[in-house]
Length: 236
Figure 1 (tube, rainbow, N blue to C red):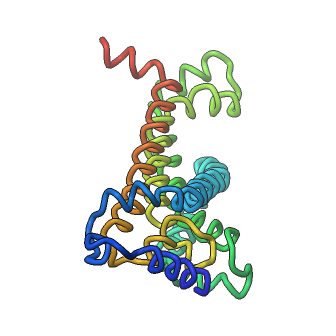
Figure 2: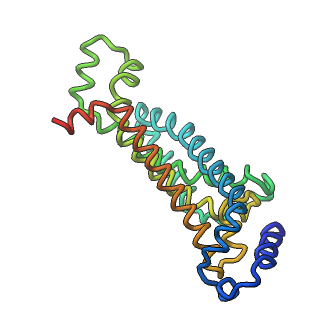
Figure 3: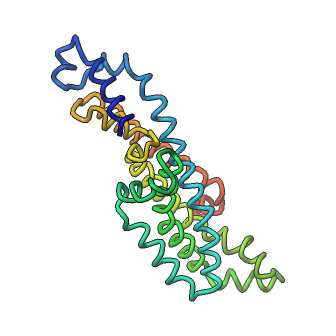
């Protein structure tokens, strides 16, 4: 919180000499002169989102594959990830602070926890949606269960998995704006520093929207590249 107050003090000191700024308006001149102050928070935000979603996928993917093979695990895993998802984000940060301290680690742990339910469900639903005919064809070709998973089931489940990845990513971009409560920086820090100043809200909030849109498009393009058969089917 001290860091946030210090940042806020910096914002207020720079806000002088313009009626637009003094009236908390949208001031293009101020925005152009102060864009550099958003570079570090933006890069911190990108790091928090990418690290959290990557860790979430690394945890949720094997859990979903295991639950797909051992159906009795679906309910307990879904219940645990569901409980984590329902914890308010600010409360999660404060609960972790005594254990992990202030900094990116606390924020990444909390943000990763929020991705697990989304990713787990989508991986599992994608695998469940694979046509039985495709599995039978793979077995007829002599594929083992492991080969069947990697060569048949996972490729066909990719659209659902990538859809979950897109949802988890855009959701995390928004939640990461609260990471400043954990001392992890991000775009929430300048946003909180002077939330009455429209120019500040416009820049910090706009960067969050642009980041979410950019990452969503990147994942969508990656999905199309990884599933060329869907493009061929659409063209037909």
